[in-house]
Length: 71
Image 1 (cartoon, one colour):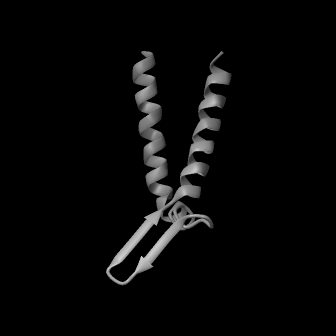
Image 2: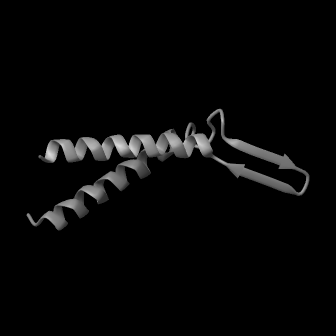
């Protein structure tokens, strides 16, 4: 199988799995302690800073493992 085809298939399967698990994942992602929420009358500001940091760390770890095992 061509490397690009294989990558697209893996990406597609990953997105399908994440989509199916989203009702369970969505309960925790975006509502972590440290996320900034300002709720005032007529104005709501939400910035999920801790969620972004954790997702970045998890994504970096996954990419590191993929790169490590491809060698």
